[in-house]
Image (cartoon, rainbow, N blue to C red; front, side):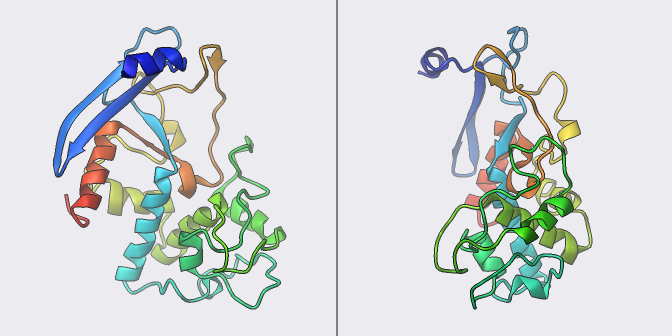
Length: 237
């Protein structure tokens, strides 16, 4: 079935893992990770995990709550004076609003979106949102926002006094046994990397995301299995 899907939809390769309770039952790669088809995809092949990163960010935020550093129902401006998008409404943005995509923020920031190849910093990305008025009153409408989750990553940096990547690596990825996973673009290199392609035609361009906390996790299906087992076991693995 998987081979049929790859051939029908012209997908170069993929990796699959099955978890049953606390057991990794099976993991395997199919197809290849390079256009020349010289490197088979395996269960250890690195992929962009995309928005699974958002779950990591939300857990990092809740760790701050456990440490007594954050109240998710207080206005975010109480913790971040450098974040102040124009808000014509009486309700202020809270951390809970950002976590639940009900903040009223735009989906993509003016700087640092998925389509911005200038490799801006997270700080520059957050600063750019200060020119984008809220679209809806906080807490009233669910509207997907990549930049809202990026703001949370910036919040983690401020309250933990560590770069968000370092914080995630130390308190989450390493503790969960996600040994092959990274949040650093420069680590996404080598023979284990699954390159991005436009079908079978050419290699897609890549760059560092300004909204990194919303989508920059790079991982394997084996590591993501560790993550899934941790969640299903109430935070322990």
